[in-house]
Image (cartoon, rainbow, N blue to C red; front, side, top):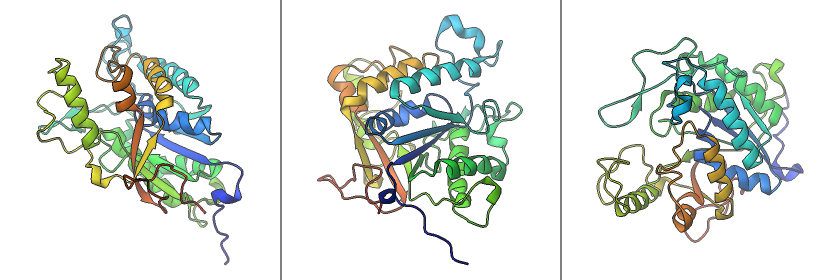
Length: 314
């Protein structure tokens, strides 16, 4: 049987990007500048968030009652935060995997190495416990509807080990395979092969060392406690030599910072993320890094990295 080749970017009037993240705020921390840039350039940007983040901390004292261990309700509140953040970045297509509350935030614990790991107990419906095929099918339907040229998600460690990040990686990667198979679940739409897939590298070695220098020079000894700019770094920090792609858009840093402020229950106004100001904020947040794991890279710049997620598409 003849199977038609996937439609390429050159054959369409638009460029389509799909991002898969675990909780509200992950998308802005990891891809705020990237989303703002491509929306401004006229690309179609779709965000899929896998949980409502019900187990997150509540950093706004007057909203402390929303915490999971108290009255609850944080997840519903974070829908509003996400909606506000996406409005700032210009992303109009944002959806939850299977709909809001289909999957519950799994929570996490910290292991001896300082990485996140699976918590000893989880709430009913935890995303970590989801059937992989069932969850992937929900994303297959979105992939076949949106037909993205590029998909971006976490690496196999979920960045820093959070079980929901790891599960989001598994779901995204498995769904991309299933969506491309014409013989798989035709009821979910015509097959679509995503041309390029990226794993985001939030904490790169050079970024982390620069951040540590700035924090220690500013007298902050508690953020990233135990780490020093010239010392060993934890396993969740990505070595620069593994990077393939850098998205530079310093002009969109103000939008990213405003979107981060929208996630007020999760990101402290005076913390290491929003506490950066002026030139330092531009330096630390103006670039977002990725690892290309499927597809043809675009032409590199003088540093050896491609600078456009859609580059290399035929």
